[in-house]
Every structure is written in C-alpha cells, then in structure tokens.
Image (cartoon, rainbow, N blue to C red; front, side, top):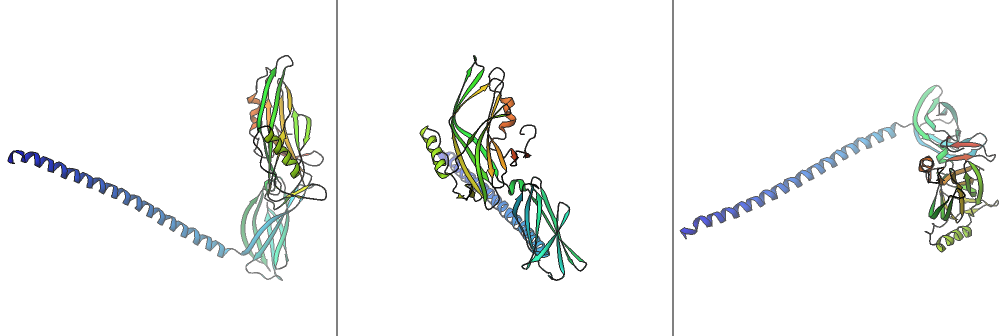
Length: 348
C-alpha cells in the first residue's frame, strides 16, 4: 500500500485539480453572465432614463404648445397656377373669438386664418413642384402677440399628386442582323404599373405605353384598366409561362369612364411585341398615366441602347436605367407642356 501511495496521491491531486478547474470555469461563466446581465440592466436603466427625459420634454413641449389642434390636408389642385390647396385647421388652447386673430406663415408669407365653426381655418395655395415650409402661427390679442412654432415641411409633388413606378418583367430575346444593321428585340412579359399617393382618393383617366426611339415617339399602346382587361393580360402572361401579375386594384368607375382609387392602384400590361432597333439607337418604353386633373405622369419601364457595332450600350443606357421603377420622370399638362422632370438633360 505504501508502495502505491505516491500514485494514489497524484491521482487524487489530478482529480482535485480537475474539480477546481471546473469550478473556475463555472465561476468565469457566472461572472460573464453577471457582466452581461449587469450591462443589460444598465442599458435598460439608461434607456428608461432617456425615455423619462424624452417623455418629460414632450410633455413640457405639449404643455407649452399654444395650440390644442394643428392639422392640415390637401384640397384641390389648380393646374393653371401650378398650386395645391393646403387646408389648415387650428384651435388655440386659449382664445377669444371676438378678439383673437391668427396668422399662418408659409415660405415667409403671411396667411390670415378665418374663425368659423369654433376653429381657425386657412387655405394656402402651395407651389405644386416646390417644397413648402410652414414655420409658425402668430396669435394676436389686441396687440398681445403669442407665437407658436410649427416647423412642418411638405412636398405636394410627392403627396398631393400620384407617383408612378413601373418596369418590364418577363422573358425577351435579342438577335443581331448585320445585313440590316438592326437589333431584333422580341418581348414576352408584363409591364407592371404601381401608382401611389398620400391622398385618400385619386382619379385615373387613362394609361398608355409610349415607345420612343432616339427621342422620337414611334407608337402608343392603350392599357385597358378595367377589371376585364386586366384579367385578360394576366391570362396572356399565364399562357406564355410568364409570372402572373398581381390582381388589379378595384376602383369605382365615374360617368366619364375614368376610375377612382384609394391610396394606391396596381395595373399590368402584357407586352408581346417585336422591335427593330438600328445600331447606335436607343429604345425607351415609358408609361403615361393621366390623372383626374389632366396631368400626364410619365414613368420609365425599360431602356435598350446599342453601340454603332450592335453591342448593348450599357454606358449610354445606365443614366436611364437608374429611373426604372424609381419615380415619375416627367409630368406634362393637357397641352403637352413640361411641368416637371427629375433630370432635364435626360427627360424632355
């Protein structure tokens, strides 16, 4: 027994060392977890404190606000003057309707508010294609001036008017013909058309696919926006093995044949056509959407450009490609006058 004592002692020492190591590792894990929990608690406490400051700040700001109500909405659009009505409604917390007058400031201009139906109202003709800054309201009580900051920015172009997003999706083939110096492009897919607006409702009179070759319009294709027409385009897509577009947004038909929609609308057109594009040329496919005011909103659906040798000219088409499914590239009035464009060097 004495002969094996050193061995037994060594084994016991190893076991104790292993147990100690396990305890050390366990303690390290507990310390790590404790640090993690502590950091989480500190972060939570810090966020709570920040929220308290924010909530107190908001409460103080709301308490100091001179207005119990300050809201606005878009009214009619005047195409001739290129303005959109912004209808403001304001109710001061403390006022005397026989004494208190109110004035709204927009882009540095003064707009008096009229007291009616227990509230102050003003209609501001905001520039349709410019950003508008509503800065503050002044309340005047027989010479005693009170000023309430508003500091609201609005952009009627993107809010009062519809914005059109469109692109071509589906199969297509292209072949070069060196004898005729042309590129034959065969399409078999859908042009998807999404229309969005911040208004509660908007009207669409018509939609057309516009073909433009080297800056010259060579054709227009009307899009049937009725439910039956949209279902027919979907059937064509399914028949040819293409992805079936989403269903058309339901609308209400007016006496004039146009359609009324809420918030947004989706359409598609199945394009099954062959184009002959000469070498060195560029074909652009646009979508023109005419709204209830007669404004024509143009969006870019596709761009194909060729070099003089018949190769795809990505360098030339790249500036246009960035606007596919981006935003409306141009807006025209009923007399085809250009009212707005995102890039005067590309879209005229």
